[in-house]
Amino acid sequence: MDLILPSSGLIFWQLIAFLALLFILIKFAWKPMLAALEEREGSINDALKAAEQARSEMANLKAENEKLLADARLERDTILKKAQDASVKMIEDAKNEASKVAAQQIENAKAVIETEKKAALTEVKNQVAHLTLEVTERLLRKSLSDEKAQKALVDEFVKDIKLN
Amino acid sequence: MHHVKDSHEWHFFNIGHTHVTLALPVITYASDRGLEFFMSSDFQNHETHLFGEENAHNGIYIDSHEHLGRVDGGAIYDFSITKNVAMMFIVIAVVLFLALSAAGHYKKNGAVAPKGAASIVEPIVLFVRDEIAEKAIGPKYKKFVPYLLTLFFFIWIGNLIGLMPGAANLTGNIAVTFTLAMLTFILVNVNGNKDYWKHVFATPGVPAPLLPIIVVVEFIGLFTKPFALMVRLFVAITAGHIVILAFIALVFIFESYAIGVVSTLMVTFINMIELLVATIQAYVFTLFTAMYIGGAVAEHAHDDHH
Image 1 (cartoon, rainbow over the protein chains, first blue to last red):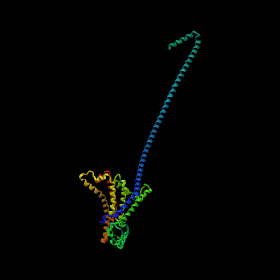
Image 2 (image 1 turned 180 degrees about the vertical axis):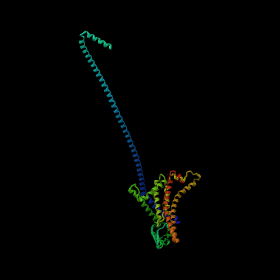
Image 3 (image 1 turned 45 degrees about the horizontal axis):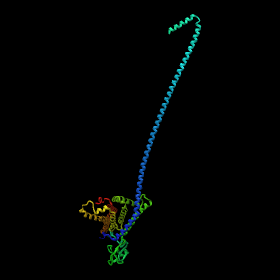
Image 4 (image 1 turned 120 degrees about the vertical axis):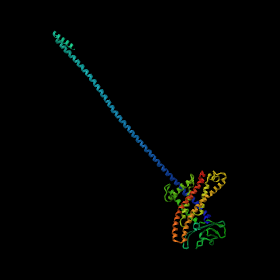
């Protein structure tokens, strides 16, 4: 029976010593330790969260960069295209202008030539008329002195008229 | 059987006829004599180291069953530092050393990775907190973690040191398990909420005619829980010690080398099982304590009470 009957002395010491142990451990061991563990778990969680955030930020940044790059590329392309268009247009315009100018010049030249030609012809006509008059005058002065000659001349004129 | 019981002296072994023992203080109290201090050797025959009425000292004797008595027959109370009490102080010293040096690590270095004693203590602390307290008690577990931790370490270290040759059978002593179970009982019932008491005295869902019976059963249930705690630890540890002692005793009974070899192998085997049992029993005691607390503080006690 001794084995299964608790002895009061041992209960007394056990109670006092265990309560003392409980008190000391709670105050000096478990409380600081549990607090430290919790703090560490908290800091690990925070670190993980921060890493996750950094990663997503990085991804965002990368996406943004890519977008910027794509935009830049697009813009470069448009600028290039614009420049090309502009240059083409400029060349076209220049060509047009040149041909217009050339046409104008040709036109002017033609007009000038025409005018010159007319003037020259007029001059020639005047000259011819003048010469004819002079020749005629001289001829008339010389030939009309005798009847026969006059008659011959008239005949000749008539002959010419008929021929005409 | 002598070795699994408490004693007023700490007996290690004999060399020939010489007893190698440690005399322990004997503290007595009697209403007419007050507190008195002696040493256990005062009450012994110096040759045989036996206690007995014939070796009375100052009118007090220790009988062969380790009970204190007075020659004049008056009442006397025994508050001696017996073998188990001394053993308990050793266990407490070891637990204190472990826990305080572990806590010191965090105090010195802040919340960093464990090192030294902290790396032994921390996994157990985390296990008790996460696997025992949080799972068995529920959201209000934090308040009870320190008690569960103290309980676990005291029983575990007590079991382990108890396995060493010459050590006392502390956690296999019913007075010790009784005290631990009583503390759990007090803690559980002090923290019992409305649901818990309602469940005991007005069990929901029970027809009125049956209620008196159920209430009696539930009321007895309050006490059977810690009683089971007390008996389980006591029996598990004491049985292990008795089995080991029985195998060793076989050697002396048969006085044969063959039996000696077999017995030694068996003792080694049982000792290994005891190492497991030491941890399992500490775990079980802590777990059941946590579950009883869980039942007492749960908001809907009737869900997980049966």
